[in-house]
Image (cartoon, rainbow, N blue to C red; front, side, top):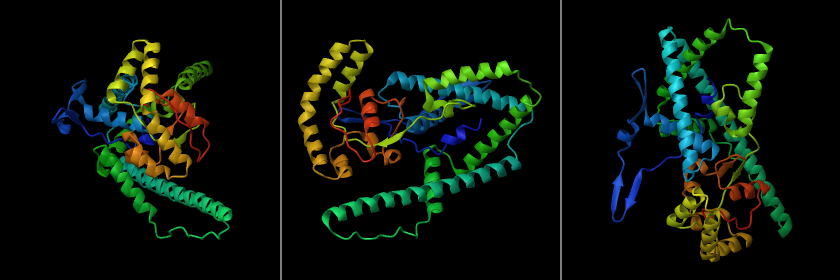
Length: 355
């Protein structure tokens, strides 16, 4: 029950629900959409907003692409099952007298403050590492040019705790929560955990049962290691090696991407490959132009802003790049190229079904 806390402050994708058709623009009523009932558990409603919030957390943390419709559908179905199970347990706990109280809230507040401190520390460590990397790069360049490098001190006036609080507040707002909402949410889950602990206090388990459960979990978690800590109450497999990757996408048209995707889904590999090859030829001159600029030493960030056509690279949660794991829901060629790179390296052109 404690694993939901690990991902609660993952930076979330903020989706603008606007669809453009011809010269007209249709705006989705976000509040009405979020208030849609997706399930009922003994009369208690589970709203679409809660499902979407947890899906966005998962997608941002594990690189789920909205273009992979089957994966999106599967993830949302699993999350909904989890929400239903959570509500069933909550109702059982409440019936047994386990409800959020002041003691739970005090513990939740303490955990919140610890999260602030840990996050502030991680921000400071990242800033110090970034400075060390930049100083080394500047020194190497100065040595190469025969000039003395300039020593720039780290800004000692940065209030990392204040910055951590601001970013956490922003993350909560993206989940339509205030700090008070979050404290109540955590307090309620502490009460539920107390209930579950009471249920299992006198339970004895045989060694063979432990081994069988371990083997079952190991098999399941090996299939999708990056999600083990998210879904399992007893993580066995730790998240695999990951890296942050930025890219400049020269993409196909939405129509062409959709057609290629449909051909793949219909198991028409040859037709899909042929169409992709044709469309790659059309965009290759532009891609070559960008690659030449990168190889020539132009700033990658500036080129990405000017030429990049992946909206995901422009979002706040991906400002440091996509978090890549071996089982992330990305294009396979993109994944493979990402894991062949060392820190600071740039790949050649990588062809995918997106561009």
